Length: 320
Image (cartoon, rainbow, N blue to C red; front, top):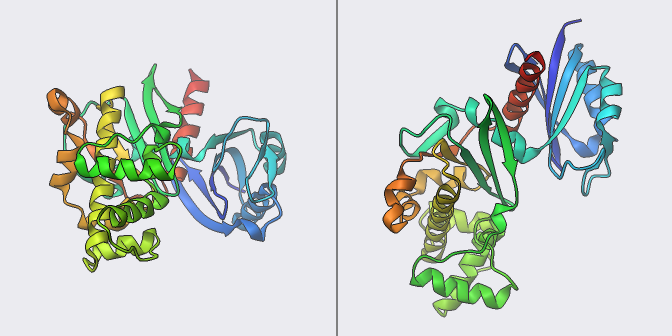
């Protein structure tokens, strides 16, 4: 029986499992979490299916990784590194946050795994940042320490929204009447798209349709609805402003990487010049932020790649 490392991306609905053989990711399988009673049950099923033995394992988990016993929200699974290690009979098990896994993938992404929004030489050893507008707005930073990459995570998606023109000031005024506090996530997320759409309708005295984020995005990409078009243009320009601010605060000249499920669906319809103009609208520091390249992650499995990178580094550290 051949030995491999095991990597996984564990979400609330699906779990993706794969094997790592000499840094090559193989045998990717996706399972519905509800079809299995526990994390131990699904990994045991996968290993039996592949007829392999596991040496080390790394799991990206959709949720906080702070306690010895982890619990998946809305799933009913609870597990520990020891319980999974016992199931697999392996040497080592690591749990990392799913956004940490995406962040750890950044050094390994290249070619058709990325779309270049703003080309710049960058600095390979400088900090990199990743943000992901999706259900929420994730944000993390990748730094290099003593030759190894380390993820610095936080809740940067919840900083205050900073309007950059009169139209955005009107948006903020509307949203301040709707929410106790207006964070960047109130605009840069699936619900954020709906918030922008409804705010613009109110400001312009129009009656909004009962559109969800997907319908608004389609109105933009198909150019069938004026309000949807402006909504998504504001969405990606506010995103550009946001990531430009991140470069100012972090010196992320290694690059800005945009993840999440929203941007890949609209990338072919974005005006890159408008994006870069909003990104670099920093007055005296325009050229400062332009030193950092901006990418969209199009790779479908960055979490698995990041888990593989994480395991590789653990081995390298152990050999030092």
